[in-house]
Amino acid sequence: MKASAQIIGLPIISIADGMQIGAVKSFVINPDKGSIDFLTVEQEDVQLSLKAIPFKKIVGIGEFAVTVASSHDVIDLAEIPIANQLVNKQIRIKNTKAITRKGQLLGEVHEFFLNEETGDIIGISLRLESGEAVLPSAQVLTYGKDILIVSDDASGALLSDASMLIQKNEKETEASNIPEQIQAMSETAENVEALESLREKQVALLAGKRVTKDIYDLNGELLFPAGTTLREEDVRKAQEAGPSVIVDVSMNIEAE
Image (cartoon, rainbow, N blue to C red; front, side, top):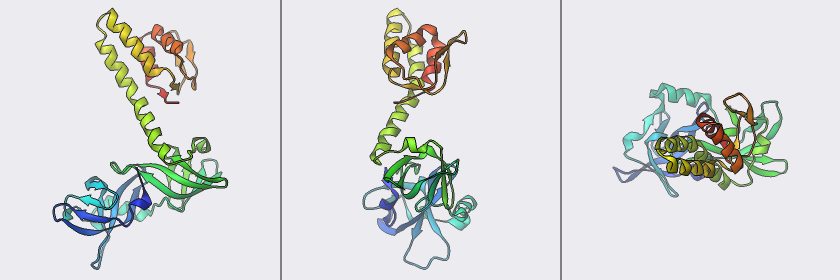
């Protein structure tokens, strides 16, 4: 994870040439994807057009430099219609106001954080009336030129420190992998002993997770309302209800 301020101004180094080819000037933001698609480049010579590096061409973003394979990775944005459209939208994140869907002011954005491997924006830092807090990007509905629209319950998702964004992402990744793990376990349960082992692993994976929608058994009876935090006995109850029910549970959970 990198704060935007840690990247702006970094020298851009060509690995093939072993030389600096410019410095990071600004970000080109894709508001639909919530990501940084290009880094614009500041060069010493006179620039008649805006130069940039596609984020996917970046080899690494370190403490002291941004590295690319060669100077050929620097492109003229005017020659890339989609990139030019993004530039013309003039989307910015810092110094914008974060407003809920219902028009309530949450705070003013003074920094944002991105995954330096993918360019995805993972959170924003806000100045609130009561101080500062960090909001995960999942709560941002729209990235605009002057305003960010956030969910109405965004205040309940605020974090006290940016480092918590990484922990939250790790938990969400772990939760998103559970359906695949459940499916893989089911495919390998070939006898009674293996089946019992499978059931215990399912309990270990799902206990303590919260269901995000109402879960019903095969007869249409409500087993767990949305928001239920699963206990061990709840997981076993879902197992008894049938394989399709336990898979449904595993596909609709989130970490506490």
